[in-house]
Image 1: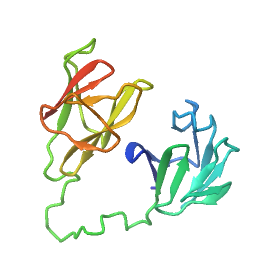
Image 2 (image 1 turned 30 degrees about the vertical axis):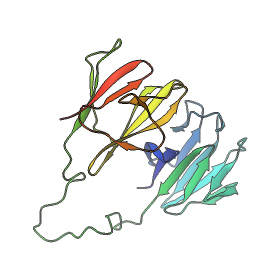
Image 3 (image 1 turned 45 degrees about the vertical axis):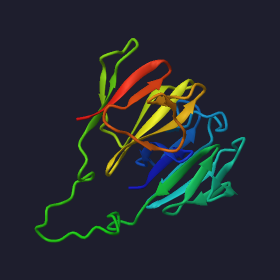
Image 4 (image 1 turned 135 degrees about the vertical axis):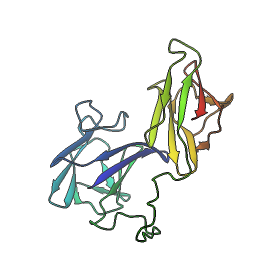
Length: 206
């Protein structure tokens, strides 16, 4: 099934499976894929799925829609194409049926199947100050965003051997152990303290 991986400054912020014949993309909240960024038009582009083919069409957006660096009006998407809208990059993934396995994975008869994240246990974010103090959020998704949009937002990404945190946006940059976060991901350790928009949270391994 085709899907979109949405990222900004190298940080994945959402994954979207394409399940409908028509999927809209834009800044307005009624779009199927909402990208809350002023460089993105209210109704920016539409993806149309016909059988196994997916076309993208720019809806006369202000800043245009780019595929692999070239401006397009309408184009058939290919596996691994990169769509650019504003500062966001959207990777289009649509591997032919039967090739969606990791290229290095060898499946032998009767061998135990590897889990998606082999050696990694669970983790959670525990709020330790502010109105929500005591609340605990288990990190079950590949990407979990925390903070207040428009003020400070960070993304925690689950990786095969740990969890990484990176800045998504913020006038007042979130901090990790009192050091300002950047858009470059930093691996988290058990007990690390994150502070966003005046709220302190602790990263804990479960």
